[in-house]
Amino acid sequence: MKEILARCGYRCDLCPGYSGNIESAEDRQWCSDGWFRYIGIRYAPDEIGCHGCLDEEEPADPDCPVRPCVKEKGLDNCAYCEEFPCEKLKTRMNFFEDRLGDLTKVPKEDYTMFIEPYVSKNRLLKIRTAAGLHSTDE
Image (cartoon, rainbow, N blue to C red; front, side, top):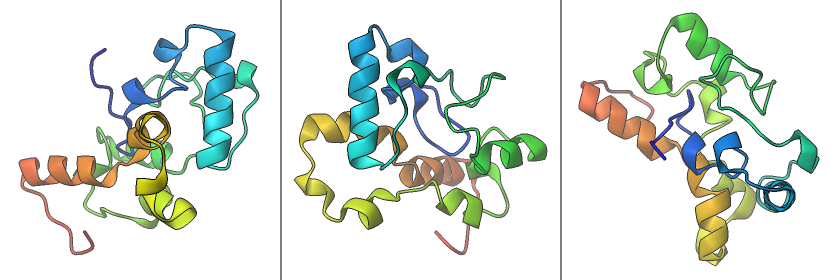
């Protein structure tokens, strides 16, 4: 699958809740359980099936503060914003260390499925560097 970068830097194509990655009810249950274990949110399995925030349909998190902000500014993602990283983005960026502590203790398969898709800071910084953009709070 082609890389799909969300507005906040998440990788939709790697996300277990992305509709293109769900093949069965078991996949939905596995995603629900993993999100609860690592992120602390619980969606019912039948609620899982996001098309990503680039799609015009309602995303998995309708309360996300990043999506409407980026859309309003007409940007592809937060990397191009002059306010990078703002407080809205910080709520979505690399929160696992605060929540889980030592990420090296997370089993590799779980890290790949439930953490890697959402570790966005380095992705956004690479885009900023490639575009010649800088921030005082990186």
